[in-house]
Amino acid sequence: MNSVQAAENSSTRRSSKSTCRSPHGSPVSTRVILAPLLLVAASVQCGRSSHTPFGTGDQDPDNTGSNASTCSDIKPCPTGACIAGTCFSDTELTCPNGPGITTVGACIPNNTYDLGGNPNDHVNIASSDGALVIDTSKTTHSYIWITNTPENTISKINTKTLKEEGRYHTGGVEPSRTSVDLYGNAYVGHRGISRVVTKISPLGEDCPNHNGKTKTFKKGTAPLPFGRDKCVLWSTTLPDSSGGSRSVAAQHVTTLDGNTSVLWVGNYRGRKLHKLDGDTGKILLTVTPPVLPYGLALDKKGNLWMAEEGAPYFGRVDTHRCVDTTCDDNICSGTGVPGNNSASNDACIMEKILVASSNPYGITVDHKQRVWMGGFPHVTRYDPSLPLQNRFAYVKNITRTHGIAADSEGRIWAAAGTSGLLEIDGDSATKQNYLRDTVGNFNKGVAVDTQGKVWSITRDTNTAVVTPGTGGRHKVDTTSVNYVNRPYTYSDMTGQQLALASHAHGYYRHTFESCLSDGAAWSELHWSANLPQHTRISFRVRTSTSRADLATKPWIPLGASPPTESPWPLGSSTPLDPQAQYLEIEVDLERLDTQSATPRLHTFGVSQTGCTPRLL
Image (cartoon, rainbow, N blue to C red):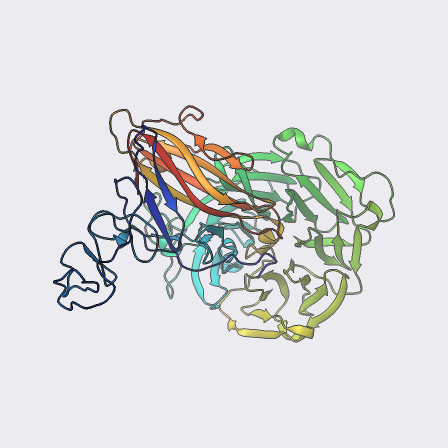
């Protein structure tokens, strides 16, 4: 697990409730009540529901008298409804399992909402109070993506079962670098001469059909030809005249259109850095980075760190400020020389940093936002939070290392070629031990999965899977994953580097339908939530006259809480169509640091003037 504990997991049911119009003609609202309870349909009656069984004992087994209480399909109630074995009156009914107004005569169980159907939502229902919470067991996915470099494919491997669940052609030559976003999508770069970057969904059979593609990899079969698998979402060819896509890093961003992913791609030989739209693969920006980008890693502040292989330099790009081609006009250099007490260049948008007596290779950022680089002859740690002269620490006198990864326990793991996997204490920056039994043909890459297991990727057909123990007593499995084909990969194959360096998100969407009476219009968004320090919730909305077209409409941001407070007016304050028949709301829960608790959303909904909208 990462340092952020998983949110409470329990029932995946959520309930709805509708209130009726007041006698004064105020807007009528429909709420989504987030609770692990049986859901019931909405009543159009006013007032509070009652919970009144006919009797307290089964003194009338035939259910013919006024004391009838227990019931079943073959033992019906004389009047009213049989709910969970109990007779209820035929006036306003309440389900016995908890709050929720029913239609007259029955509880309707098919009005439940299951959070388990969308692996991208990253939320769950808390058992303690029924609130919607961030579920960190979903924000990091249980897959590792390992390239089969000679055959130009990539394998999706379940890190819990160690079984391959997908194999996909990547569309380029020698797939090598991989990065996984917070939604579990994999992005693949290539070390060969092809300039291709490809995005692949983790959803398997649930991948969306696009461009007529309806099939995906089936276990035990060969991968589909490139362009035929519906889980291969897009593939972009970079415009560079030289080199391949040697480094990739997915980033979670919030824009006017909502929360999404972008992808940073480095062209090593051509010294270009590209920013791609994660949804479409469209190139959004191309700049000249401060160093040749051989490896990329992001930190929590949005700094993109890059290693330059073969030279004693690494670089930094402030992605929040590098938004057009002017950001590479003045690259700051010279910062970070050990013993240099001059002013730092931390305020620069781009920065070139000297590493004393070391050539970086793989790169990662740990949960304390320290930058780590493999290479030779040292493993290097750079802490940008320290005074300039104290930022560097070196793990010396080791063999050459390539890939490098951090876990949530403060350990650093480096792939040390023919010496096996190297374990390092992250705080002291001292060598712990070599796991000699992880040695294959050559230890090239390393990654940490959601369960904390360490994957040592070798250049042959075996991958070592290490379950860390105490005192260096680690369990090593070198036989279970013996089906990969000579992988050349050492980047963020699981998404854990991004998860450790990012704040957690979770979102939920729900659609409402207008009652379409004369004069009906969307009126207000309202919610109730508990927001601990360093957390927030934000909302966006879209409307359409057709439910089928709703997904094509642009999102309209409504605001974030804090500082926005409930209720939030619709129509007059946002450019949505107040008379549109369908309205979809997305709520995004955010935890802004790794130590804060999850935000808790108890209810949210919309109101309409004139009538009550329906939940869909």
